[in-house]
Amino acid sequence: MRLALGLLLLIAIAGCQPSAKQAVYTVPNYNPEADPAVDLAMTVKRAQAENKRIILQVGGEWCQFCHRLDAFIRETPSVAEGMREGFLIMKVSYTQGQNENTEFLGQFPTVAGYPHWYVLESDGTLLHSQDTSKIQKGNSYSEDKLLAFIKKWKP
Image (cartoon, rainbow, N blue to C red; front, side, top):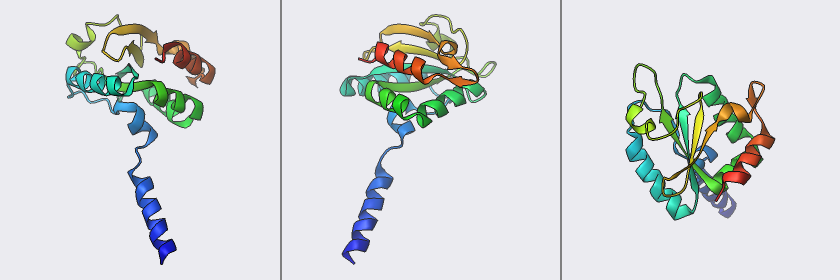
């Protein structure tokens, strides 16, 4: 009986742990109806409390490489750990003809392609604009390049 209760408790506790995606992403989906200014205010509060930097990931559900990047981060333990330790990722939707978030994105350098990253200090100050094609390797991403990026930009 004790063993069964112990196992049940262990399963319940494990089920309450946030997934890797939830832990690192403050806004885990590209929502064209979201207000990125409101999302950023929430992300800044959390980044300051956790002493992390912010990555704004601009893209959309239509973006094949956006999904590949998410999967690469999630499925590459060293990259996932580095991201969890130093960053919060907030997705910003860019959906041509529907919601391009022009006002919000207008405060940052021009996007070179999608996904695009902006690295912000925990207070929301822009530190770096990253063309993610520079961290690609073929049709995926480079673990070495992502780890170098993490090392350079983590707090």
